[in-house]
Length: 274
Image (cartoon, rainbow, N blue to C red; front, top):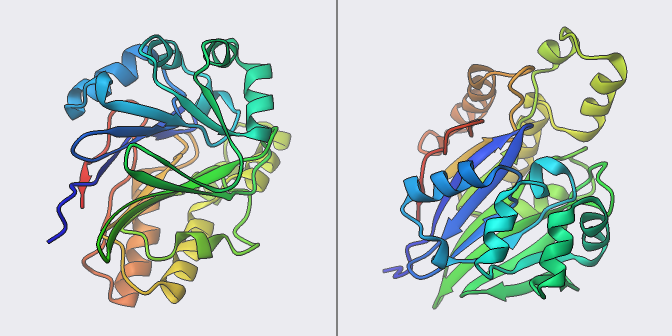
């Protein structure tokens, strides 16, 4: 029996703000914190996680909806360390005063290499193509006992699915993957042409998300328990579009037992327990 209760919940996952919580019996990690203190603190309370259990914040990239939220002030005052790659560190401290305060207090940990551990959780980073200054990374968070491993893998703000991105997502129990926009809704929106083109170059459409999941399905040795589509546009997408695209893909492959749970803008998503 696997004796570690690894759980995950997307606290928010849209273009307006992102934060994901991964925890086991004695510690929690947060991936990104691009929301207000009021919202994230409330989401932690709803999840039953005390701030004292939060042992680290992992930053994917230096955009405000991932690294610019005021919750970072609360986390810093509580002594929670923040982990970033060296290139993202330079951009984040340049852009965000709160990140400079994290550094001033000695809580900003620069990660060289792509593997490290925090509070019993093994973390692997991998590059994600996006137009963020300093680059963008995804994270796999794993807990192992003997020969058994439970893994949660997150990749959002994906510019394209080339360069072997799918290989970093294989054999995960939970996949948190961007499904940002419906192509027809985006092109029919009132957004300016330059922004539409930028979104198409730097974020995955529902169809592209489905293609990425298909590539994972072809290479993985085991099926995930759940797929959590995230970074969903509130203007150029709907949960119906996201779910229809992925459900059709999984049903055709016979993956009927794999759950699909969309993230929300101002409501924590489902808790997936492994």
